[in-house]
Length: 169
Image (cartoon, rainbow, N blue to C red):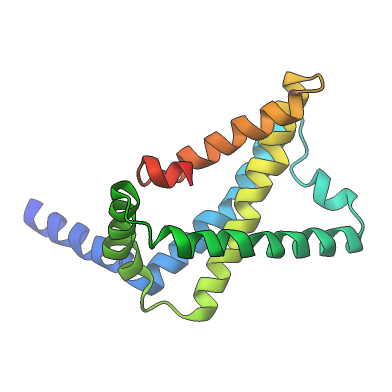
């Protein structure tokens, strides 16, 4: 009986590691962060979508444009960083190349796009829309928003921990 359960668990684990399953689970997880943010925002009395809904459509389009432009220097830095001979960076690149890239190598462009959109929306609503605004309000004063930005950025890095170098990046 234990042998059968073990084989079923192994088969289920293998199914979840297929690229289409990884993308599907990732999209569901990242999108569920919006629900978590809404619940946490309600509990903390910090509306999760306040910044998004209070902005005009033009301000939202401008914010998306600025966000997209902000990715250009980060992508350039990524290209440079991958070429650094520094040991910790090389270990991080090997970790990503050997363990993460194979998970997504057969994923469709649409799947990766949906995962990216779900991650962007879910994580931003939770970390920036709820946590950062709540910490800024809780800390108060002129330094509250800056301290909240630092604190939530560190929390965000820790939630994406592959190793210390990745968390810092």
